[in-house]
Length: 526
Image (tube, rainbow, N blue to C red):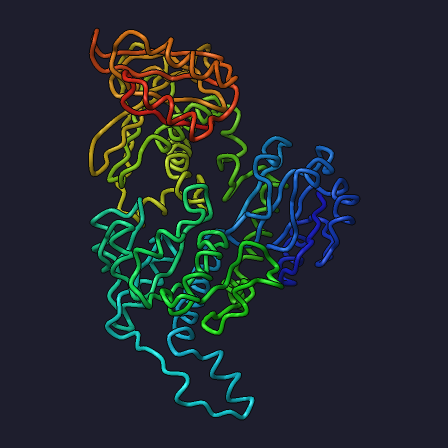
């Protein structure tokens, strides 16, 4: 009988589900980190919310028995995903169970900020009756800047429009059609910063969004702007925000999340124009019930049948199809990861084409796996299961084409992205029926195996490229493992894929970019 530990507060009904499915469960919310380390090796599954930290040490202590970590909620900041993958532990979440609750909290925080409700409440309870002190502003007719127009952001936009606010949105994946469907105006970030009276953040915390709202961004805002963050601590630079609040550039901020949590001694708490709550975005009875039941069902399915749902570190796929599809899945994921990392403009359409042996298989899981990888640089919540929903919400057309024709390869998968600026494709095959290889990028033939750290270069086909790159990386002590080249015509457009032993610093990338042959260079991770 599988055994599961619940180390955070979950609904009692989640415990009932585990037991009804025939799984032994220990319900111990508030278990200390030390006790977790000593006991986790006795369990097949660990059900958590945000309090338990699933670190490399915890996963190692699982001793190979820990098969699944289920996060009741969206964010997995408290789980070391890389370590989980390394130790063979599936990490699941419940991405849609608390969307309405979080969106409502953002709207509530905006209202509380606009009317200074927390400060006015404290003053009134103290018997001061300072009516003239708490002069607020209306939301009616104001412009709300929405950073992130996914599931939660879309709900916030709908509620804000009900308050007769004008909504402008910045989201790399928001298509013009989806923006029209939401009734929002799609703008770039600088335009949003300059026009918004209120700015609300609904993006994951990634390298691309960390300190997205920093001192430079605040300088572009209107004087008197108000900032709301119910997404993740770290998206708003707390020091820059404090400076803006003290100078008057920022009229107020409403924060549900912080860089360090629990936030017990944050300098922002000393400011009267800050409304703060202790990460309550998902804290309603309905949301807690929804995510608890979902995670219990998902973990039970996996432990009993091998079915994987809402997995963050591996594709979701039935137990029956897994062995046959595994090498094709790896290829599809690599194609999607490559395309997602080299694409910067909003995506309008994604097409997956299948030729040869793979065309005879069930390609739906392959499409969803590639789709999730394409979008992963922009959202931590996307996975194989919810990727089609994620694409549909953003107006991205996804299609698959099965070719019943002979080709140059026994198996070929081609992924084509259509963006606002271009249409480009990347193709791959399996060597020996199991080893993924890229064989074509943007119509240029190449043969490349992807490794954890890669450089993708578009360049002019002129002498000196290889020597220049080798010299710069050699001087920096960076080893080149493999070097793959391709070109359209002699002296024309060319590409290079370089496998290196470590990721490069921004300064080193800048040096490479200065080589006269290079048009563009990107650092990729797989």
